[in-house]
Structures are given as C-alpha cells and as structure tokens.
Length: 308
Image 1 (cartoon, rainbow, N blue to C red):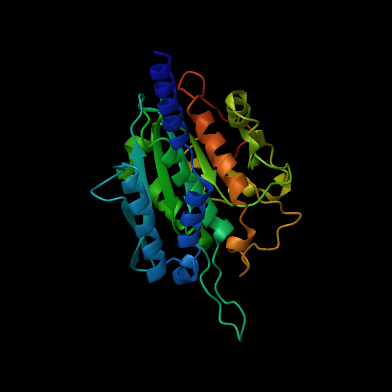
Image 2 (cartoon, helix red, strand yellow; image 1 turned 180 degrees about the horizontal axis):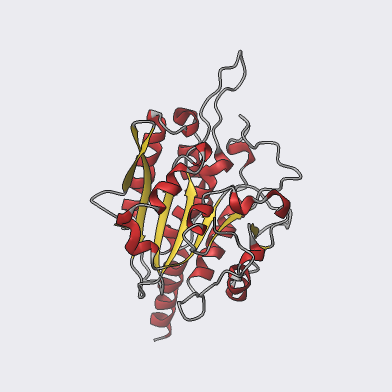
C-alpha cells in the first residue's frame, strides 16, 4: 500500500511538474521568432507571415480553438495587402475571459554598410509572444475557471494596427464582451529594476488589477507600479486598443529603461535574454492565473483613465 501510494504521488508530481514551462521551451520559441531568417518580422514581409504561421502552429499544438472562422490567422488589411493577427481560445468553466496578448512584429532590417543590419527583436517582442504561449502551454491539459483568449498582434510598430483591427472585428464581439481583463506582454526578456521574478504594469493608477492579482500571486511574484509613468506607456502599446473599448487592459513588462540599450537596436537578440527569469515569471504568472475566478478577480477602472 505504501509503495502504491508513493507511485501515485510520484506520478502526480511528474504531472504537476510537466505543466511548467522549461527554459529550453522558452529558448526554442524566441530562437525561432528572433532568428536572422525572420529578418526582424516587419509587417508586410514574407517573414512576418511566416512568424504568424509559426505562432498559429504553437496554438494548434496546445489545442486552442479558433477565435473566429476556420483558422488561427485573423486577416486585416495593411496597405492593400493581407496581414494577420493570430488568435486562439481555451474554453474554461466560465464564459468570462482572461486575455493574454503581445505583438510579434518588429522593425525588420536596415540598410547598413557592414555590421549587423537585422533588428531581431528578441525582447521586443518575441519575449511577449513566448510569455503568452507559455501560459497556454501551462493550461493545455487543465480546465481553468476563466476561459482564455491568446492574441498575437501584428503591426504594433506601425501604430498598433493589428490590435486596433482585431478589437474592432465584429466576429470577435462575443469574446470581447466577456473579457474581464487583458494582460499585454511587452518586453519581458530581461530582469526588471525591481529584481528577479518581478514585473511592472503600465497604468497601475487607472485600475485595481495589480492589487487584485498580487493578492493571489504565488512564489514571490509581484506586479509593481509603473516606474515610468511620465512616459504614458499605458497609452502607447496595444492594450490601448482595448482600453478604448472600456475593457480592463494593461501592459506587463520587465524592461529596465535606466539600463536597456537594446530597444530598436540590432543587439536585441538572444544574448540579452534572461531565460531563467523568464521561466520563473511565466510559470508563477500561470500558477497565479490558475487561482483566479470570476468571483475573486473582477478588476475595475477608476475615473482617472482616459478612454478616448
């Protein structure tokens, strides 16, 4: 009997551990998206389309359902050509939805005489896409309390074009109307100024999302207030497309702007990624989300936020 109990406990432990996202998994995803072959993933290029298809394949392997139509690829017009957002949904016990997003496009290549001319965008924002894929990895074989939508936006670097398009897509109304909160991951590859296992939220003064999340945060994870509030980052990333619809939407980041020298530079590549810290944040974020329910997590805006 003791032996059987030990075996069952061992199997349970293996099953629980298997839900966690490994550093190797994180490295694999970022390595593909930020590879030289993707040429900086600029919208309107074949490499950008290839990146969208790769993300769609990751969603398919995690058994996500289509958000709309018969594909994870959600088209929109870009200069007379078709560009794609990528969207997948995980059904939970409730119709209420938690949304996880990030943009996958970057700024492409630059004509230079010698030297590195590819702007790989490992931190900006292959890291954000890896975070939301990692969360979908964690919940692949679980039934969460909330339903979950995972959205990889395109065209952020050209003015948040993809998030604007999908937020206004009538085919997304059923999902959008049920979103309780959106977490937009934007540059999470490095250690924040608050240290390891810590992120900051843009626009923390506009809602109680961070307080509610931190109440249930596990293993020391903490969402800190925005240390760069004067830069108005809350209104400068894809989350604002959903803010305009009065949906609770904030960006989550770790970038230390007092030290970062890689923003929109060719050295934003694998060399700057802290895979250990990323794995810790993704796994602890997922474990915290697993504790959230529509009853204990219903963040609200205050009267400080500007919707227009």
